[in-house]
Image 1 (cartoon, rainbow, N blue to C red):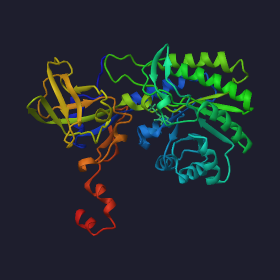
Image 2 (cartoon, rainbow, N blue to C red; image 1 turned 90 degrees about the vertical axis):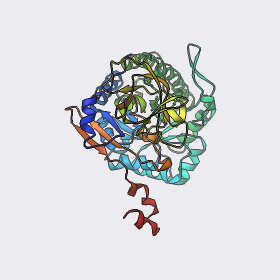
Image 3 (cartoon, rainbow, N blue to C red; image 1 turned 180 degrees about the horizontal axis):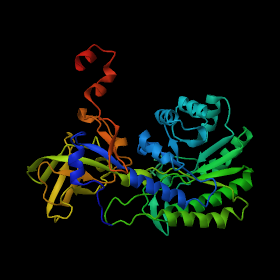
Length: 423
Ligand SMILES: *Cc1c(COP(=O)(O)O)cnc(C)c1O
């Protein structure tokens, strides 16, 4: 599929008069259409709910848009809970799927009435000791181990993942939780990441539905929801076919009708915790070409760096690049596109075929709407960029200002040097 930017050169030339590059910009129209399509795809399930994985894009303006479509939040830390609380989300709108969880985070999640999704069997005792009781609604994260494969092709390696209860622990855990007063149970599993296939959710659903029937039969627990979690991917590369959420919803429905309905479990709610799928394609990192360098290779240095988008440096991830105004020019140059960090992995693209880039050209780095800004950091004293929202009416709203030196130095504030730095 051809990758088209949702901003043009003219739009960016206008935006930079107010908000200089680099910045992340999000496409409200795309976010809304996708959220609507997801809601429709699972509308067959009465209790269906998406809990947006806050860690993917922790911006309240964006999460508020999703909230209009009935989405809650999936939190994994204290500050993510704080954000949900400040946004006015109620307990039933918050899923707390964390691991290696500090006591104060369980306390806070319980205080908010969030649904707690336990990552380990030892957390049953830890939670009970921490908050003094076991909540009536509780969920456990499942990890069957081994490889997760579809039609003999390996998708991911849960056996190597730190998360979740083993099968035995899950049966044991449900019994213990029931004996301690839990009444409504959920099962959660996240077994493959960034899957670009319509088969992941239906296959996962089938496994979890069968497990749910066995758990109900063996433990007598009342299973109220099955959380398919995240993992639906996006086509970062132009030759990848995007997932079709309608087909995914239909095939989960089929598995539901084949397994849960005949077992008398047709009222089980389906939950999802999508992050990447909800926001990934609807974000761009926009950056300007500052330098060209001709040495052993051809380099274009831009004003963004890996501190604004870590995925290429961290995983060698592909992010498509469009040179604005040159959308139709031939890709007859080979470049490494670099940031300024003193780290040689600070490259947004390596040996990428692109049109000839001139200094001052604006580059769009695609698919940065999830796990993009959120994974930023301050190495080399680089500051966090602004985040902008391209509204449906074409206007642009600042939804997070760029970090300034005073923010970077703020944690020195018990020390005398703070005053000097902020003169
Ligand atoms: C990261 C995460 C998600 C979201 O994953 P995506 O790949 O962005 O869909 C959902 N649930 C949990 C528990 C996670 O850790």
